[in-house]
Image (cartoon, rainbow, N blue to C red):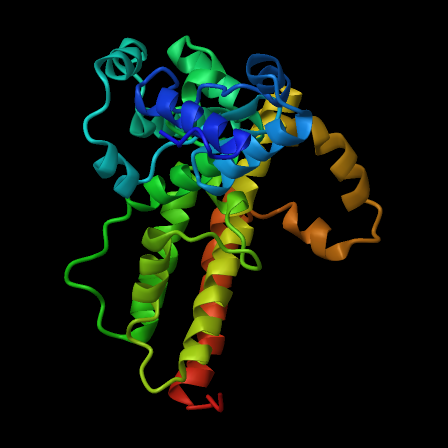
Length: 316
């Protein structure tokens, strides 16, 4: 407890922290607003603002858009310092049956079935029959939830044992592991970013493993190879999410949509202006799709990398 001689804002900070430590305010609960602080403690708005700013700087609270300032989830070292959670706080969490792991799994379930655009804290909360505020005690917000979801699904990847020895076989295996993962979770490919990567050790481990047999190349060259391969698989697999979203918007699956578009395409093909497309009309229906794009592109990409690796064209 702060000493009486401490500045007013410090005494208020100490009181709010006491409420948090005592379990009166649990992670995700709203703390007094600046207006409430001015009313309860009789201080100026500037002092109330300084109280919340100090608590945020100390990592005690965080701002949630559309909600307000809430109690932050304590860091591991803070949990250890505080000791066991008060009985009241434990019972409140147990009543909802919520945990970070359960929330992440529910988020994955929603995204797999409805796409990442359908994901929201409210939508995930509906899976448990609770308010979205209950989720904030375990997850900071949608951004953190998406990151936790992506990291969790990468944990599903089982690396081959024994691993392929050759660099090409290893890179092909890594690409296929990614492809299988994106097929299982269509939203994942569009979530990942090459230009603004997220800190996901499990995903990074897969990429590191994929180029693990590229020997003699500079690390920057290995990284370029890894990200080029990743980008190809991601870009192609993004079609899974596109198709899922299109089906939800139109009510038609891919076969139904193609059947509906057939008269339009027939007119284009018979115009004589597009001989390549017209020639495709005699090909089997499964001769061009995401799977064939992946197989063709992967082979050609590795062919090109073979010139670099086996021809020792690495100058980086």
